[in-house]
Picture 1 (tube, helix red, strand yellow):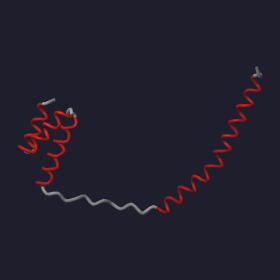
Picture 2 (cartoon, rainbow, N blue to C red; picture 1 turned 90 degrees about the horizontal axis):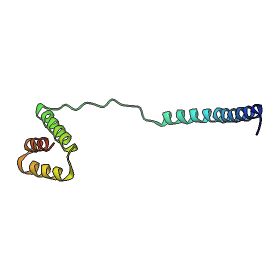
Picture 3 (cartoon, one colour; picture 1 turned 180 degrees about the vertical axis):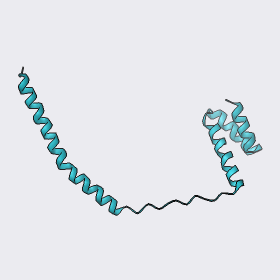
Picture 4 (cartoon, rainbow, N blue to C red; picture 1 turned 120 degrees about the vertical axis):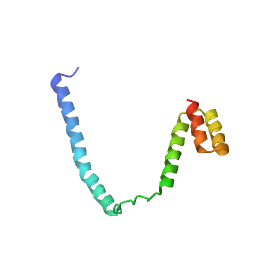
Amino acid sequence: MPAVGQRLARRSRAVARQFEQLSRSVPRLLEAVVVSREKATPMTKRRRPRLSPAQRRALKLQGKYMGTMRGLLPRQRSRVKRARAQSGIRAAIALAQSLY
């Protein structure tokens, strides 16, 4: 079994090799980042859509419908989808909430 000093020397050489590899790879990594930033298109601000009150209500209903559908089992989902097709989204939401 090697002495403690030999083990420490071996481990310190291994750490030194790893630091050397790291120091060689950092400049290449930085160069890749610079090149990718140069190629990237500048970020543009995304315009928020102007929604009418009716559209906003419709989106809220859609979100509520999707949220209630999320926790249902597949058979219950098909039942709720059928109710939506026949009676509308409000009835489907009410049915989905009653199935919980």
